[in-house]
Image (tube, rainbow, N blue to C red; front, top):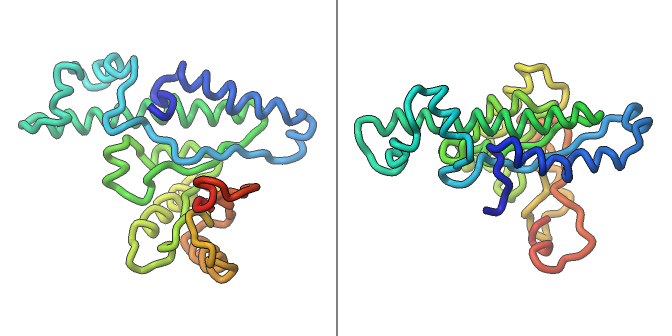
Length: 231
């Protein structure tokens, strides 16, 4: 696959050593104590369409009381027990993702004087959340600073309910857990004629939705390849 096994603690531990701990060590401790440094994680998911990891069978049996391997076919085929298996499977996938990826990285940030922020993939779409094992409410609760993204031209369009759903889902979590800052990743996948007016419209819409801190999608030194259309 194109990502690490986000349900596997050993896999994420290896990833955080290179992507998190070493970045933290590059910042002198005395500077980390004086200022807030944050690491942004962008659109993590539990895995592919039906994510699997080494210990999922063991956890599933312990939590649900019946074996997953003998019932895995019910994720595809339909019978009277299929809906139960699917619900149980995605609950376990979401649990492993939250514990082994989200909480694991958040704790790593805390140990190294950093703060954990970012947004999940598909917070704006309930169906995609279901098939990717992402529980926005439970996962976002563990972030130091919850966030969402608004990175394409249809943002603020009345025709696209998903952006409203995603942003308000995240800001709802932020309000309930008392987060002072809600981030929004913005200005990505926009045309060259987007301009300052478009940026102002983006900011106004996201702040109305509950964000109070903007995270620009990216700054690039050139326009070669995909960078030409990315931001």
